[in-house]
Length: 605
Image (cartoon, rainbow, N blue to C red):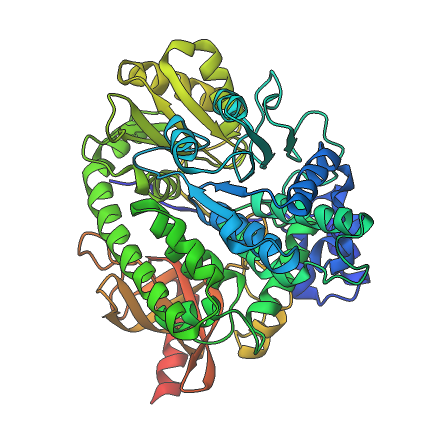
């Protein structure tokens, strides 16, 4: 039996609350802001909530940016072939697209001189792997410049091999750097989390680092006279930067860069002249209303990620770069089919592994580590994230690595437990078990020798136990307390002014008591359409993923304690309010609720 979900009200920073009110935010908006920022942020509420594009940090303080910009600009000027090498996730695919668009459309590099490589998740694994390195050496022209996106900081040996065969490498990345430093075989490693970095914002995504490099290259080419002084700026690529930023779950509370990029990127996606990719994804995913950060997080991001989970991620790059409406629709539909397949694989994997995960949780483990002999490495990440959501503990999901005797895993975490730092400690203690590993604060990946699994599980649990001494394990939902006003479309718009929502700046969630007036399954049968009575009012509501193992969690007539978000549902050009239920549980009817229900019944007659 899974542990019950704990409903916890966010603590409020009174300093931030006062600062937000003074800055002109409504009382409700100020309350939301104060639940997401700390006292130390009170003096910069305006900058953190709604940063202007001018607040973007310059690339000048990134490590190695000068060397990297000069190397790329020289390759452009001298007509060298350029090899783009990126990760297979959404951050990598969008970073790949940014680099290719910049080289081709802004810097004038002929498309036939740009060569694209993305590691195959199943066959080659994460990073600049030995296999993808050999593919480059077997087929790429030389001499040439290699530019990585969202990877490379820990791949010295393979970058050294590229160098020894006549290829110069510039790394752009945002993942952690080994203690011994960045790969010295690369001519440059542009990474804001390097120990010697003076860049102010360590929270930006890999695609953002790639974009900043392109901005520096543009300026270098202008300085050399290769581009005119009025050459177009690269702001037109911020829609791609926004996609990778939100999909990689980077911090949206402490990073004005991330928020500014998302605000501008979403504006570009919703503009009449938006890329065909956005219109195609909007159509094939049957979205309604404008594209929001939630659209990117829960719809577009998973669709684009699915390609790299099950096949070669270059198909996602093809869609992002497509300039033909009909072709974009065709490519988007292929990705949707891959995403449907991913969902089926994910469901099967979770059914197999949940009993083992639950056994560990009931047994008192602070971290969950599972091995699935039939698992699909491409779906590890989403399954690990579901384990974290279900059990409120860090999770590592292992299965056999394709074509190898090794095992591979994706890791996800809870607040207060830094994945990459934990992996560094474990790898130092058991170096003979590790083949490759990497990651950042919120997520990571590791490949182990099969015999190292038990040692890893023990060490991972011990690391979580040390780091999470003050953490109460178990699933939880953070709320913004009771909603003091009646839910309405106007209130939804008031809260939407605080967009974009995402990691560390989550959508407002409220709690209340109500009565289930009607309930019916929709979609694939796991979602519920509800009519809820709250006080004298009735509200349409949707609860996604409510039905698990065929069990409906609520019945008509039940009084429930419910947590919900305000949502807008657009149908046939008409927009109305609906509640998006996060959780509901039946409760004993209190005298107050009985009185409210009776009043509601009278009004309904």
